Length: 315
Image (cartoon, rainbow, N blue to C red; front, side, top):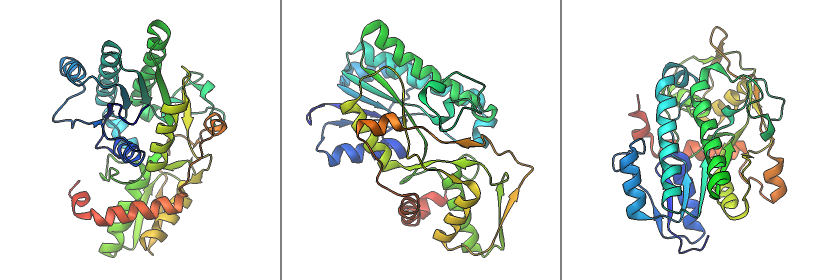
């Protein structure tokens, strides 16, 4: 992928897309395309085709998606299934039609069965039932993987798929209902400290184990795969390290400076009990993450404080 290549990042303003843009810029790429959702609705087939016909990108990072936490996924399954199916189908097909040299599709660790053997290998795909609370999102992402594989098999397209673990970082979503667990906890503990609350309530038992990766590490992995990975099989992107929600809450509270009581509401769902990715294939290729969980949360909290006014408007 030469430094002069024309590269389109679908979702360039999101947490992952913006991290990929920073990564490319650090590595000397200057011909980078991006379009906001107001400028280009990727659910619109005709508009997406026009964009690709006019711009003719050579490489595509498909990071655009409708995302959210347990509550959002469980409440809006039709939105998560339809929007994600349309976004990825339109981008992948337009990439094929306009001769894109290589495309990287980003999925999610939720594509794997709820009770997949741990750590989760890529071969676990479609080997069991999905977690019901995010089934719609998972099915859409599985369809994206299969679409990339089909275009590679039928048309010889260099369309690869990568499955990141749970992400967090600069520009994360801090919506109180629709965000993922780490940014949701960060905002909740920050506001509790600011308002002098005596306790913070968290959904579930605190026992589920989760793996987290800083967004800039994911971006580096995506760039690495675009340069070094050519297989049709999906590949996991993770750290190989996990933490319980209980310990995560304690860590975030410490970083934020909240000293009140942490209460777990056991009447609320836990979601998948454990979700650790087996990233040995990625590591065998020569990639390793750089940012520890504590360092990453500290960086993320500084970003939250810097942009607190904008984030606090997300109600």
